[in-house]
Image 1 (cartoon, rainbow, N blue to C red):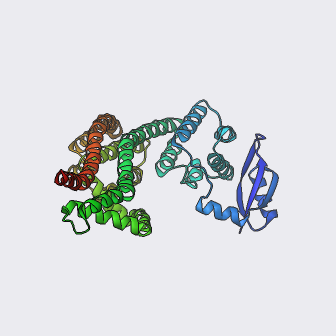
Image 2 (cartoon, rainbow, N blue to C red; image 1 turned 90 degrees about the horizontal axis):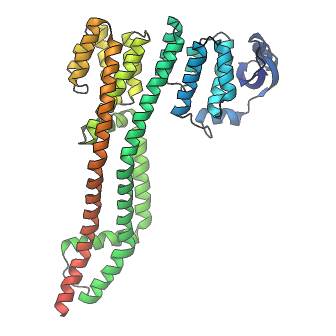
Image 3 (tube, rainbow, N blue to C red; image 1 turned 45 degrees about the horizontal axis):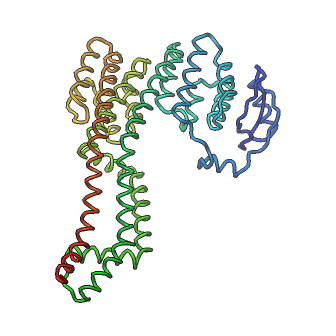
Amino acid sequence: MTKYAYKATNIAHKLVTGTVDAADRTAAIAALRKQDLTVLNIELESKSAQIGKGISFGKKKVKSTELVIFTRQLSTMVGAGVPLLRALTTLQTQAENPTMKGALGNVLTDIQGGSSLADALGKHPRVFSDVYVNMVRAGEAGGILDDILKRLALQQEKNDSMRKKVKSAMTYPTVLLTITILAFFGLMIFVIPQIGNVIHNLAGKDAQLPPVTLAMLAISGFIVKYWYIVLVGVVALVFGFRRYVKTPSGKEQFQSFTLKVPIIGPVIKKVAVARFARTFASLMGAGVNVLDSLSVTGRAIGNVVYVKALDEAAKEVKNGKQLSDILGGNPLFPNIIAQMLAVGEETGQTDTVLIKVADFYEEEVDATIDSLSSILEPIMIVFMGSMVGLIAYSVMGPITGLANQIH
């Protein structure tokens, strides 16, 4: 089979672009005509374009805000009675992001070919997540697609807001840490060697210097003499760490470690619990069964440790245990989750009570992030000051002592 890129118009006379697999050009045109498309242009997709698609070079990422706007607009149009194909065609025409525009073009083609909306969206995992696809599938099955799309838009807005707050809280400490590292190397490369020469000129080569001073001079000398080794070592360390945390075992170990880090760990747990509660509630409210909801929710949290915990929970639920009892004994989930789940299981309103838990923990995350910023800033300043002070003490101490001897 060969892949052909095409431009065509649909029954609404709107431009549609996409790709189609066919044995030859004639078969590709025939396949498109069966989908009520009038072919304007069709040509063999170049190998370079196919390779580019496979590794996603040059593709603009679809931002969460763009996806929220698309979801809200689609919900409004479907709720107003606009046919799905017409609504998608309108949104595809209006889309400014080329990645979103291309994905919607392919979604339209798949739907015209007989696919469901969920199946068509599922072919574009970089744009539409598992949570998105599964909720759309549940909405189609229950005939409540417009309501499900509203839930999706709300959930995405909440997740995006939380992500931005966490990123904002970490920006200032990250900037301070970067400045500290640059200051360290700047002092070691440009300042310490000069001061070392002054000390040796005053005291002589055989002078007995304090251990701290000797250590600083040795480090500075090594960095200046073997700067290329240091540079390669730092790059290799950063690259190796990034590669390691992308491996399954490395990612799990790193994320498990971050959950145990003081100050940072509790924030990560609260974010994960809030995301679990809102995502699981949305899926359950959409009519997705418990086992599928647990599987999809685990991947939506974005933490391997929680994925494994929810996978294990799904196995025990399959064996007849209550989810509230399972999570109640897991340190990753606070007691309030188990208690509210128990209430939901008794009343049949699991989604409603978990939404309240999600709201509570999102407020907790907001408060914690605000306090986190006020805690981390002085810690980083003290750390930076201590490092510079240590360097200053190690080099200025001997100079002061020699000056006193001269007097």
